[in-house]
Image (cartoon, rainbow, N blue to C red; front, side, top):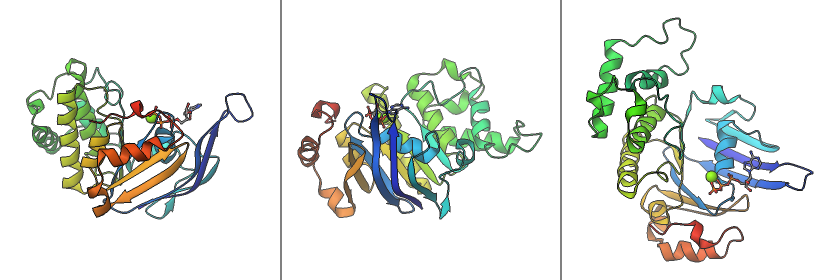
Length: 263
Ligand SMILES: Nc1ncnc2c1ncn2[C@@H]1O[C@H](COP(=O)(O)OP(=O)(O)OP(=O)(O)O)[C@@H](O)[C@H]1O
Ligand SMILES: [Mg+2]
């Protein structure tokens, strides 16, 4: 469903700060693939997601979703079929709006021709309430609370819901639990996994936690210096241990192994 072919990206070309962030990336995801992405700082993980979402244009190469070449699509056009969650809990939600309004915004994404786009009917309210109840955080009783009153973990849970309330063709998570305390991070990850499994979402999840990279998903890729240097799935992934990953990681050029969390 996602096909990336020969993608290159170099920042600050011709300057002293020139940096090749993506160096001939080729990656094909199948429908329902849940891929964990690991690699040292600066390996190119976020840049890869930025190229897919359209925040960054590649210098060369092609990005296709469901057979459609989206390499030149603007970001807002891709937002209709891509859901994203970032590390910072403050980023994904509008703090001065209610939980309900945030969800409505996400739900109405792509329907912006209608003059009634902000109207929330009872059916919508019920859908939001049910989705919130599934999180198990009691947020279904706080639909008219401003999001700024919520904790980081609650906000990330809402962001996750916003990214998936209209089933996206592709879900991209960029260290989305890294800013949370370990207990909350675990809770949000468990919720993430449930949402992905229930909706059979094709997912790219960047993490620095090797244990999480091994526990979740059916496929794992490791990046180093703008290249995918390891791609393992199915039974082979299940057999992998943190030690195996660490060994592989220590052979890379990018970062010292303390960039990785053993979990
Ligand atoms: N907008 C930009 N302008 C200039 N350089 C950039 C830009 N975005 C990324 N880079 C550089 O490209 C390289 C890859 O960065 P990227 O953010 O993709 O790494 P990453 O694998 O996500 O690392 P981290 O684990 O630290 O988040 C880095 O050297 C980074 O400094
Ligand atoms: Mg990054």
